Image (cartoon, rainbow, N blue to C red; front, side, top):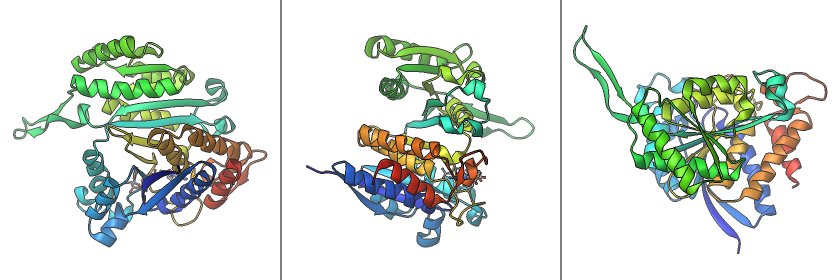
Length: 365
Ligand code: NAD
């Protein structure tokens, strides 16, 4: 029987709608090749939602997301809405409430250097070798960014700024299981990042990771690394990593560092997962106002976000592998949007649509 899957499609602002079209064209091909149907419902999020419905995350959009199996999101924001009070601006008014509402506690950010793009990476070829494929798993709803108490207390000159880093056993176990499971689907190597020489929350983190690894995931090689060392190792010897697990703030910083290795934000997808199979999939970058509306944005981050949706929400690993391979093939054939064009031999500078078509051709229509 044909698998029916409901997707909420939220193209957002800036380059969002341009790159989303290409991801949807790729999904059209997947529908034909695999026995599935993606029922797509479009909704507004971010600046476009403010303009059309008066709020960055309107109730109609909430209802559509709730009725869906997964959400495919573009990016939100732009200079047009920067005059609004901070909490009403697209990013804060849409993305933070969305994470909270759907309890998106696990953020997955791949850092991939495609072999044909080693020249676009910030690292030397000798350090990178033949490409790179790292996945950073970041806890997204707890830790230093979210724990209470938090705030500024007292009166000047004696005010105190307070943040709290608190993790319960349940929160650590839940994110650890995500990391172990994705490591199991990859090269079975998990590095858990902490600061257990200074932080009590890290001591508990390390203890729980070690127990789970031993009792439930003995097939995954687990090691622990202090966060300062991890940030250094990422640029000295990134090839040692497969999956990296971090608490919220460490993950925020290390996932940005890791994605800088890719060469362009236009290549980096992300997934935010809640309990069960529901997830939100979006490019790691923003709305790129400097190039929006010109048809030159790189659609790869959006297309790989769709691939992650197939893998992590729909368990369609074969289809996801096929998309990832088609992206590699298009890059090997020399297709380059402006952000990754270096002018080397065999490189062809292409538009957003042309890159989408090259990837679709690689999939075999
Ligand atoms: P940005 O990620 O939009 O752009 C940074 C640089 O990367 C720009 O030069 C841009 O042209 C380039 N870039 C990004 N994606 C690209 C793509 N697909 N193809 C080619 N080049 C690409 O970051 P910014 O300029 O700091 O932010 C712009 C807007 O996006 C702001 O309003 C910001 O609030 C918002 N933003 C949204 C999200 C999100 O929705 N998750 C994330 C970050 C920033």
